[in-house]
Length: 617
Image 1 (cartoon, rainbow, N blue to C red):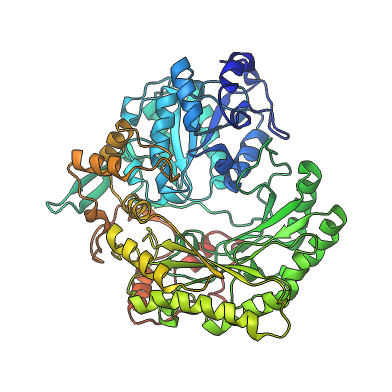
Image 2 (cartoon, rainbow, N blue to C red; image 1 turned 135 degrees about the horizontal axis):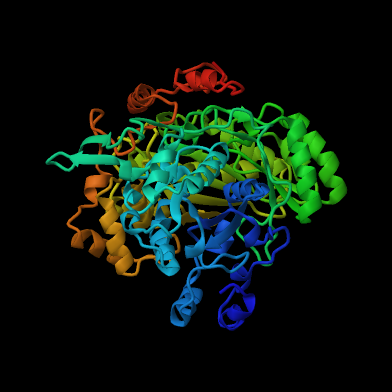
């Protein structure tokens, strides 16, 4: 399996063979004989999804900068490729050297989405690695997880050897150094796990015992050895200007979801939306300087040849140096014929001047995220934007030459009622109307408003982590209700499958008991559940029934005094703050953003510990 020639026949039988063959521009080639550590970095979804993920690019670059380490990529194969691999007896292999994953020292898996959990098991199976950590031998790779889903690792606790809590760049080097030391000491597999359990931000599930009450809730969770801390504190980078950022991105042979280069503007968010996990777990805000970002952009333009560059963050328009940054980037990108793209925009600080400047080379559609249809619901979720903000921004966009806008909303939010859902269609109508009311819009092209409506999923470490999640039936009823309220042909309506959203919610707030459900679902053939053509609710329902576990136990509302599966993780934001935010949500009371007034979330203490962080206390 070490030679590409051995795979030529297999590649010729599948679609998108370029997803597996490797050899792309800027991929790293090393001699495996010259390194001490081999690290397989896995994205548990298809190549086009995984290659769009910025975190993988960053850690791939950092690991390969080490002379003693070779990091290679591996992705979940599509159905046709998996069938050919299993028939030919070909194990899961890496893109760079086509080496079986089982031969690596580490299999690192980034967990971005709960519906990829079945892919994790399928990839382990394809690799020939035991599915349970307790069954792995001394020659098996250490399976480690990271990413936002790792903040509640308990559904995967019996599958992974360890997890990284927080930002991987801050801890990955320590893990590799500890591995070299452990190798020299000649220790056992368990010795390494105990060794790294002492590193801040590392969670080793096998070093903790969990007991349950008669009603199924958690009674206690405690370390079973002195090396494991009672609380696992997340790792954060204090100064993003000093952290290594890739000067090269791998350029795929075929299209991927986000086929462009990206510069990361800042981490964290000042806004405090009560549904948003990322806005809580990535606190406090840490910005890169404009000069650093321009340097990053120059390197990527030179090394990739991409014609588009994205500005990546949770809320790019909140970047304090945005005018300076865009001026400097435009001086660079206009000359190179590279366009700039922004993620979804806040409707309360949309700037037509900004959009015209960043899209001088190429105009793309605009996306706004009001999130809720009524002002009451926007106050409940602490969105802190008004209908007037949206109409003003849409009008500016239409008058600026855009005729197409996309609006993101959610249904199934806590404390929601049907008038709030109806407000989504009414708001879309008003956006269409503002096009026709203005004398400055181009009437030769009619407006197009697309509603993208997701189903709310309560996530750990948010003020809504205690909220009930709507059932599949209730969400479907709400989706149909909204569909029937939309009568304007200029409004398009897209929504997500309610059954997928509910299953996502089950695993988002799940405990260790769900591990056996995952194993049973794998036996039943569940995989690629994020893809509509592959998802099977019937198989998942059978897995839950076979294991005697009720899905509704995990979608129910939780009491404040209940021990939650993720309570052992310290993200720097206090439980008291989140309880207070949930109580304010019940009254539709808002909290100002961090720059207006400190709300005492706890991140300020984290900043004092990590000198160099920025918190608007």
